[in-house]
Image (cartoon, rainbow, N blue to C red; front, side, top):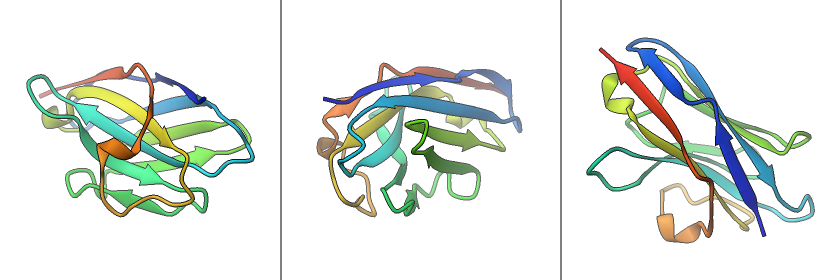
Length: 125
């Protein structure tokens, strides 16, 4: 079992920055693909960044160059540094985990059985 708890969301003006954290309770002997997804009101949940055990990363075009995913294995924590935020980044942000040795270079929500409860990010213009 994997438990995920997000934090760090909030309200920020356009152009600002936020860093999300996801504390993960998971086995240190397994290999994981970790990801950040987001869901805006009335829209489907979309994948925006993923990272594997070798720190290989993949980003959606909508956040590439602005967001950075990283992990601290010693702290069992996943991060999402978000810079140059735009109003269209407003959404509930979720972290997700899958017991996989690698991440796909695309986002398939069905791959991830473990999800956090989400943290809200609101960007005002």
